[in-house]
Amino acid sequence: MNSTTPTCLSDINITYPAVINGKPCLASTVTFTPSTSPALTSGNYTVTLIATCSSPTCAVIRTATFYLTVGTNLNFTVTASPASERVSTLPGSTGPVALTATLNAPAQPSTSDIVFSLDTGYVLPAGVTVCEEGASCSAGLTSASSCTLGATVGSTCSAPPITFSVAATASPGSYNIPIIGTSGLAKSIPALYLLKVGTFTLTAYTSSNLYTDPHQRPVVNFTWDPLSPFAGKSATFNAIDPAASVRPSAAFPNDPPAPGGESKVYVAGVSSGTNADQVLNAANATLLWNFGCASCTPVTSTQLNSPVSFNTSGRFSPRLSVTDNAGNVCYSITGSDATADNPCYCPLQLSADSMIVSKPPPTFREIKP
Image (cartoon, rainbow, N blue to C red):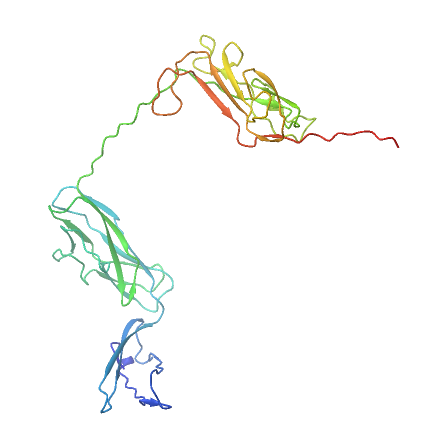
């Protein structure tokens, strides 16, 4: 066995018979035990194993690589500060970039040398080079970009600052440059430095037209009573129920809370400013009910207070649309073809299954004893 480790793991020659129990020797076990005198420094080592055959009929050499870690695993983080910069004028250069390593848990038995470099396989954009203090700019970092990291968790160390030089021929754009730290075989997760090349241009944006209504649209609310009618019975829908806020009533405390309250509309010359603050009536607005069930009688209505007979049980979503009488002065609610010649209306449709119609109640017949 030959090794690139220090003398305390010096070369070891081990000879095994070519045949064991009549079969070729295919495997052997070797135990690595670092010596204590002299002490082996904690770190990562590459050990090359060499197997040779010296038989007259055999002249073969085989090698294998074994990676040996001595001491605790080295876990550290690399950061670049600042994390990004723009070079607007070409040719140009960034300001100093500090590369820092921080030791994470666990603590180490001794200090560690950290060498910073571009991540393996990464190539800088055309026209961009990296510059170290006191050295010419090149396509990568040298071992001079290094520092010694302390053994205590949270320890930091920084290499001499670097800069990125951008030639006039560099293509404008944004480039994430991955920078790593290594110590032996230990490698950090890349720190991404964002290099932005070229001027920053804001493109003017013109939105589509913004339309506003001349006054508030109708405020739509409604209630119905009873809240849970039986099939075959009627419920009355009310668009101007001022008592909605007091329900459920004391007589029926388990009833679900009723939606709504009074519907209101804008009335020219009467409303305060542009507010829809006038209670809905037959003179200042029109309304259209849709009770959400095809078997209802009626299916739709235009009355303020509309009785409805539910002929089947189920869950329904009633809807009320209110249009004020201000004329066609409001813009389209949806679509890109908004024009100021639409009536000012507003719909309210309750969520699915808001109204529950129960099955018909049981009938009773008195039987003589």
